[in-house]
Image 1 (cartoon, helix red, strand yellow):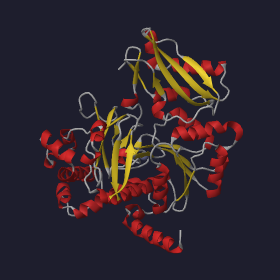
Image 2: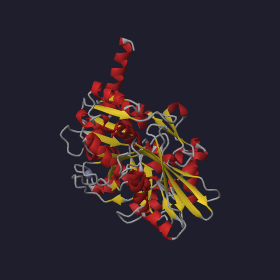
Image 3: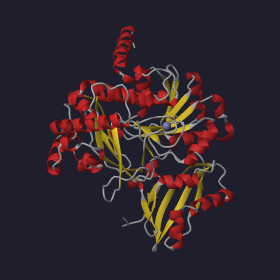
Image 4: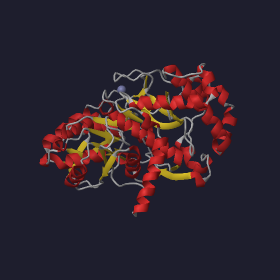
Length: 487
Ligand SMILES: [Zn+2]
């Protein structure tokens, strides 16, 4: 890069930085994430007569649960008006459903807006696009876990908004300006989350390092050279690197303050192993490519994930009836974008199971809702036996509690009328003792136990593979269903 280019980049970053609300959060703020949401609501309040009227005030000093909910409903109405005017899909959708922005006065009214499914998004991404192609800066393609290809666009404003939330989330985790985040994602798929994270760090004033190597020495070298204090990455990948390193190295001496796990469900078994190995808290993040990845993050209480409610509205519904579930009860997570410019999505059916917790977390937040740890994606579920539903997180909890296990795959076959589960386990020191421990753990999964009782399931089998003998396998491919003609 020439000196002139460096100057240009610096000026650009300075201009961008001034636009970020996260730069206005005081360094000693106890709840940066919630403070950022309050700033967003206040900014919208100033600009919007509709919101001032809904709140019934001319001034907004304090943002509480009532004010914040009104902010969200206001943004839903605005986003409906915007998509009605600019998206071919939604214009038609609202007309057919007979729903108008004015109908959304309370949270309960949201169910009047029909759900948007991943399949619908895959039909024609252009029908969702609300700006001209020249205004889009990035496009993410995702096949996700459902295998349906979707394309989501981002404008400059969309990307800035994402950088803003990532920055305040990192502050919430405890990062100070100037500290370095080490990014650990494998290089798989069509796009690289590392690039977006590194960009966000640069604009927000954090340093970043990154490595996609499965070699622990290589990872440690990068961490040491950059003096990285925090790690973010894909849990199954961090887990693999950690467990393959085994007893060889002491990761605790690196002095990592926190490990943040993103883009995949984090099982408690995996969390315990990682916390033990790195000697620091391991936090969970939930996100979807459709909404720019970073959507919810745990605080130190590790009791549910704080949601980015300034940009997204979360609901949990009964997937059968579509009704809202009571607080704390599990159902399908439904997400609505509140400020998206390029590809806004209204009431997106995430296929992820979670629950909604009311505000007031033990960490001291006032209005921010949390979601229960998502897990058990509806489209990764497979039925065994008499219809018992199994999914990767269930097996993660059973198998990854043993530190010898690096990774595994479950093959499901059918022998006559009985299902068979074969666990192909990549393990350090796989022997008869470990085999027995794994079998015990698998048999204690109630779904497996029930299938055995009903005599529709054979006794599961365990096969060992040498560690490192197999390439990294993404979560979506953990269960391999080899039965034919089975729903
Ligand atoms: Zn909290």
